[in-house]
Length: 88
Image 1: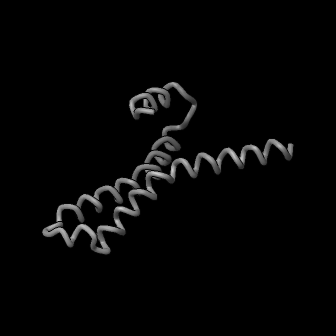
Image 2 (image 1 turned 180 degrees about the horizontal axis):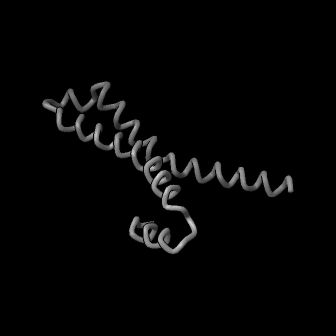
């Protein structure tokens, strides 16, 4: 979902501004750090051997993990909701 739609929907919802800002920060800052640091590592490549260096492999791995975290959290949330519904 594009951020613009989320921002507009948040304005019309009953979500408190504090909760929206805190949730947005917690959701975006870690990924922004990973992307910026990965870009920094890419900028330091001076030879083809740098592409397979430990640092580059580490940051590429973190990007892949960062891409799958939202899917994991969504599935975890569904499991928690299903568990809560079955105990009621």
